[in-house]
Image 1 (cartoon, rainbow, N blue to C red):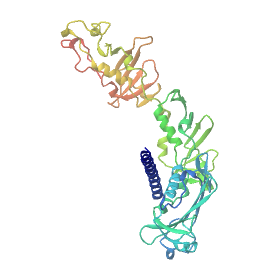
Image 2: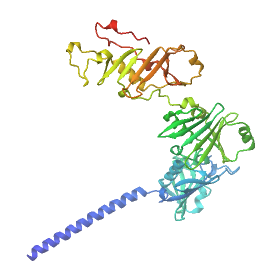
Image 3: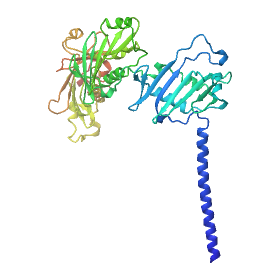
Image 4: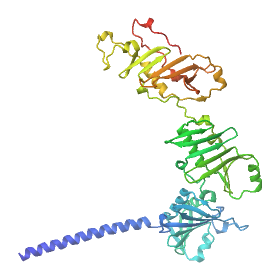
Length: 482
């Protein structure tokens, strides 16, 4: 019995030892993997822990070695101070403005993940030899506890597409890929936010646009947009959303933070080609698009800076009220329509099929045909197609009642289509004229409306029947002209 207990105890000890060995082996493997991942890193800092950056840079010139450094004049040095404010990077100097969040994130990533390849020397007395005493790039990173660590980029190595680097953490000099030099070769323009306006499209509740041709007001309404001036009408929501996106996403191609008098006079001595007021729940922003002698500029009321913008901006944001009107001509559901007349010929819907009115009467109220199979009426598929085409019809142009083109149209329309849904106020009468100057266009008007729409002729492509007339009934079916 005692021997048996000793065997059990020995086995237990062995199992515990094996478990401990496995745990240690797992721990050691993780340590080895961690050491492999961190081997050669120039710094142990993590991007998410950095709250401040002091970026110093001189333009890259001939940086192949000490003997090749030009001594005639010191190159200009760029110094930019950045801080995290409310979770976003801001530039504090040389200007106070928003930073380009992605550019700063990429800069930090390139530094904190940069790995050196080999240590080639040690001692601050040797730094000058490798271009590190006066480095072309100095990037000081500050953490929340106030600790600051600097990273330096010196000369390129004579061969091998490498560069000399060091950090304030030690006196050691390392070599590594030249990529760190090119990826940190940033200008103030690179580091700053390019967007002219610091607002988001979803926050805009209304906008007013003034151009030499008209004043326009748009208001957000029930998930869409409503045109309030110069006329009251539904707006084309996708078109307005695209316009708002283009305005709030407007980017500068060049900044003039302290514009000289010549530039200011050339822009402010004449009216803007477009003025935009963007209204949010909290504030209003006033943007002006101005025309220079050779370029297009943007200014924001209350700001000193002038922003040079792309010339093609005009086509994107200088819009007329007509171009932003809702181009959908009708507001009905084709599934609700149960009776249609086309130039005086009547059709009815039975279940999901359409028939000439006299044939529709041969079906019961349940939609079933009870007569002889050989006498069952043929459906008229073109009516269904026409109703669907009208439901989704969109205009190419919206014309007001006094438009000169409309005065040339005949008094009587070429076609008249009446749609009925069986309810109160159920009739929708549509008058159609053929365009005299364009065989592919038509003019469409609801009989009770002052607005006329120019649309593609394909909207009424199904107005004539196609092999739908029952055999022997051709003489009784009027031909429909299109």
